[in-house]
Image 1: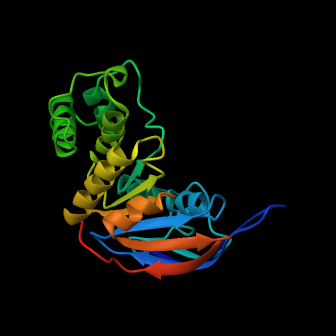
Image 2: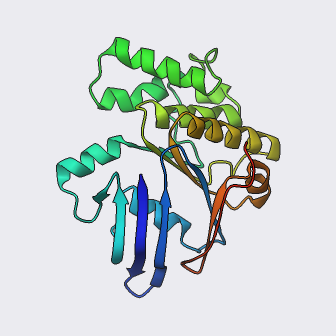
Length: 225
């Protein structure tokens, strides 16, 4: 599904953000990416989301080298990628349903199909009864669930989440992480960057640890969630 092969990333005047990093994420696998601030987690995500290219090595998604992918291939790969952010990035004046429909609207799907898919995504994250609620009427945990629903509404093969529980209390954080684990059980590959080692221990999934741009640990899953 996703493979990093000896990937390094350098910035002019800024040193190396990644140094020879290699790992893979399989279909239906839940993986945590941990490390101190500045360890390289955000760089990994920028490379996966094709915002940047590796300086050395290869990033492969679905067997395609992202640095060599043609425009059409990159567009197709972006459709296979779901993104979840810490700050939700919801449209404040729109309902939960309308927020989740947005990627489908951009893709040009008919209104009835958009509504059907968005409703199914919200039901999957436990918000089937909050379709018409605006973000202001939702709790922080519910807002994050809307963000997750929006990321999965096009059924991506890979979901990446950048510190998705950074603004949530411990119990809500655990509930959101369990939701990610359930998505992996349904066959979606899920890669989550987090600094919350307590949550990582409770979930027990495979954990990659970065330190100063190097992958220093690849710990296998210890328990089912």
